Image (cartoon, rainbow, N blue to C red; front, side, top):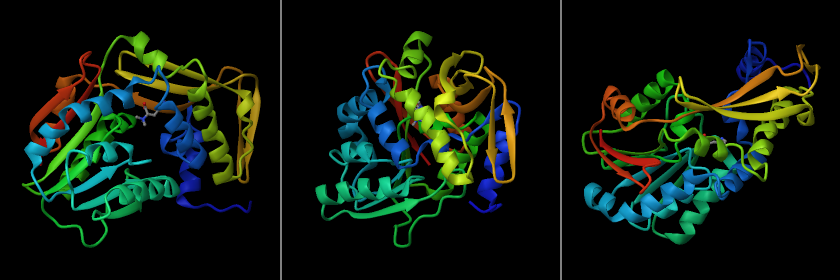
Length: 308
Ligand code: AVJ
């Protein structure tokens, strides 16, 4: 691979050279990573997706009642669009926009929604949510509902999540809504089990980021040289995932290299967990008000609907 200092290349390398090194969790989602994540969502330990779908099914008609008819549904981090498929059983949007970093994956998800709802006007957009959100032409400017499910907002640190919610708010007018799904603070044992599944799918998902990075920057990470580590950080209310070097290793790329000592880690993900208070405060700071909250019976997960 020729040396190609694109901004993306530069930012990946800059992160690899930090102490400790880190990789942005958006790089989990190449096609294989998106498929692995889909497998994670079906694991017994990973309660998040299942619980959110249960809440959507149970309270979908209430959501429909609150938002009314003729809405444009905009799903962020849509992936396979499974959540919007569940929501569309209860609300009948006119337009649907799916936004995700994984281009192939999201277009497939959109096609599945199109075949279920032939009269729904659908769009797939490949975009990085850390940047300003641009909608395709032709989406009506009123009665929009931004749907950000899966606790994906948990990947952003408090400052960036506030900024992301503000960007969402900027897409919306006074008649519009934000429907947000977030994982709640709970017994660390339950949290840690969800990110250390017995089948090792999460470990594969974590290591796959190295293969994706190899492809993006021409590095020579050997995924077998790294150990999957996931734990709850109670001080910051977040699950953390790391990759730890099993022995001393040198990783090279076209313009440089880095030595990692045995046990040295690369921080690959934060997954923040919320309390209802931190969640409502965050929403209010971003300009959202009148938040409705629905939860599962264990109060493990919350779905919130806020007025823009
Ligand atoms: C898609 C970011 C919500 O943090 O739980 C799953 C990703 N990481 N297992 C999460 C993930 C490890 C997931 N999010």
